[in-house]
Image (cartoon, rainbow, N blue to C red):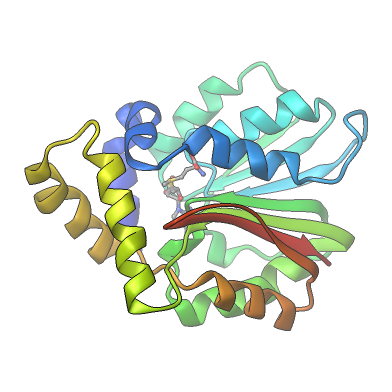
Length: 225
Ligand SMILES: C[S@@+](CC[C@H](N)C(=O)[O-])C[C@H]1O[C@@H](n2cnc3c(N)ncnc32)[C@H](O)[C@@H]1O
């Protein structure tokens, strides 16, 4: 996890611009996650944002649910600093500089959300982490994740990667893709097939598990406790 932390400490200043050149339809993807949350906009809800980064998802969430109390968690200090300044107008957002694997909450949250962070876990950790997330939620609470996922066959997976690279090439050179972005991806990311995530979530006790949004190598999925 140290190289993940180091990567985001270094990238924090440029993250908001960069992420939109690396993740296809980033805003559309994250908006679909926020839309999936089944609450009334006036409700007072407690939300946990795992790997909050520079606070983009929490900011969108506060626009839709102004009464939400959010716990933002990230292990990269520089990312959290930017999130704090972006969300400075809200007094009901708490920041925790921590590895989210070390969290221990018991039935405290109405929603757990995450974007582009859980694929940093190893596949065997991802499965057991869904059990932990289930514990964090109140009964009836929801978990939604926007993330890097793989195809369910070598052929589909290659198509997903090719479409992803096509997107990056709109703003980056082939050389940069080959010497920076693909090596970083291989070193830091451990995505799994969407079908596995659905299975792991169901095994962890979630119901109503569904896929909200998908574009080749990226998907938004979740369910209810
Ligand atoms: C690609 S960024 C995404 C940030 C934000 N969620 C977004 O979608 O804009 C991934 C973030 O997850 C954080 N992260 C990755 N693994 C983590 C862990 N185990 N504990 C806490 N934060 C983690 C990184 O520090 C980074 O800020």
